Image (tube, rainbow, N blue to C red; front, side):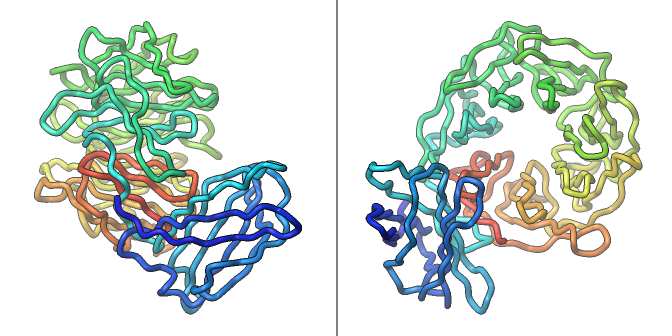
Length: 447
């Protein structure tokens, strides 16, 4: 992917080494030219600002105070116009060792609230699984357009700004579910052909098959990990089978699989959302489809009480998203309704009151999209299938501060349409979207 490269040299005094910062600016963007001030900050490993100064946008050399050797430094750069931040970037953490040559620090610098094409992955993947292999964002498996399932993966190097070949799965998988345990181990469930292994554990760049009783061909299920390392898997179905009410508890890193009594309602293509705060260790199971059509039933699972009824959605739906907000409410967006069309109405599930209420209306009804909670507390809604059944590039943001229940505002579109994709946050604060269409997108959130 072609980039415009700008050089900015940061000089530390008292004999400290020079730190060269290379700005990676998306092609066609000129953030510095549109600003009236540029702010530079040096952050320590705790995220505290060690140094800040402002300079004219045209400056290409800044004097820094002495930087002591340390680990986990980051450099932040922001450009403002009339007091508003119009562009920003932050480097991934880097170390400055005593007596060692200073590193060259890349920094992705982009207009805020914008998507820009990233260097593309090796393959277009539909139904891929996204997770972190250690600290490396990885998109694994999926199916090639009109082709077979894949066992390969693409790993994104945020420092270099490019995809590289990632780990190889033990079985080709599309539609698998992934959860990350507290120790960083990733477990993949299902999505493989009958006869393959049902679970793979991923750690240290290697995928290890687990000889367990989990059905390898299970798809359209939902998985969520509890703080104690127990994983709850609900619903879905095997190859050619109807949606099931079957549920499993998986323990000891994927080596122990215990079937549960099951859901109160059979479902697939639903959501499972881990709750925190006052609700404690619990998961909300919402929506999905059974053998007849969309499901409105909400269930609450607790390790002590199992599955309990927890009200109903206002609109039955599947292929929706569910996002836990800072308020403890769960935002349900989009999906496919009983008429086969994308749903426009969003809802907020209140787990304590065991009820749901309206939370605004999407500007573009959609299903098979992504919903990502941003540091600001807003939720970024990207892509999906529109009313014409084709992928869309449209984007909108749910702002919980708008009105009594929040509302949606329009946002800049993706660089290309996509659906059934995945989004992962990078170490530099940007968001990486890949799958469900060609290429990949980088997004710089607004403050």
